[in-house]
Length: 262
Ligand SMILES: Cc1cc2nc3c(=O)[nH]c(=O)nc-3n(C[C@H](O)[C@H](O)[C@H](O)COP(=O)(O)OP(=O)(O)OC[C@H]3O[C@@H](n4cnc5c(N)ncnc54)[C@H](O)[C@@H]3O)c2cc1C
Image (cartoon, rainbow, N blue to C red; front, side, top):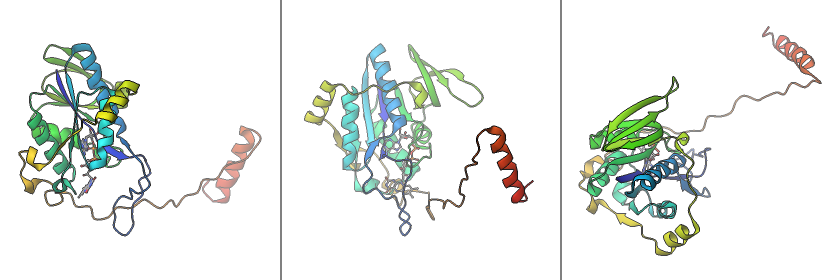
């Protein structure tokens, strides 16, 4: 079983700060981490490998410092790590990112499962997994919370707000992982030592991919961001004081009545 996991390195924050003048992310002083859902995707791949054998390759498009997250994935137990890094990739939106990831997956070839996280905590679009599956022309199941393998069929449980769907899909396929899928393992001490001392991360550029340069980077990105901003907080909270519920309810009614809301 050959499994490829797409993993993104993201800023370690949910409170993304934006430079008001340039509209770009302020990355200075913000440490980078492996995207949380992608850790679940990696664990999902490693758990399948533990049960059925196989090879797990991690794919990450990003700047040179993303090598760190790839070494973390190797320390967790992945077999191979590839960093897609080229100036031509800079400025890519989700369409262009998926084009590059799909080209890299085609170049690796002979895969059974491609895993993505459901969503990245910085871009937050949840588009890259489904778009990559479309470019590869393979079936996809998103919001995956359980996986069982039987021959060339995968039984997948998909979380929805109305209840869980259990479905059977043939490989090759794309799965996007949510945190309910598993508890990601910690890298072993031996794994950390091996990964960081050997640093076996391969770097791929445009030269490794069959790709139309007009479909990637800023020029190949159909999305235009007109403005990015953090909404200004205009509301203040007010704590209703009181010894017990009755007193607090009376104080709340008084306040609402002062404001002529009741
Ligand atoms: C016009 C425009 C220009 C942009 N320019 C830049 C730029 O210069 N630099 C920049 O960093 N970002 C840039 N971005 C943001 C970039 O498009 C997104 O970071 C990227 O496409 C991923 O989208 P997302 O974060 O919403 O991921 P989601 O779709 O939420 O991610 C879902 C899953 O896809 C996989 N995935 C996503 N991204 C990657 C990746 N890079 N490598 C491997 N797997 C991945 C992961 O498994 C992840 O869990 C730009 C966006 C736009 C619209």
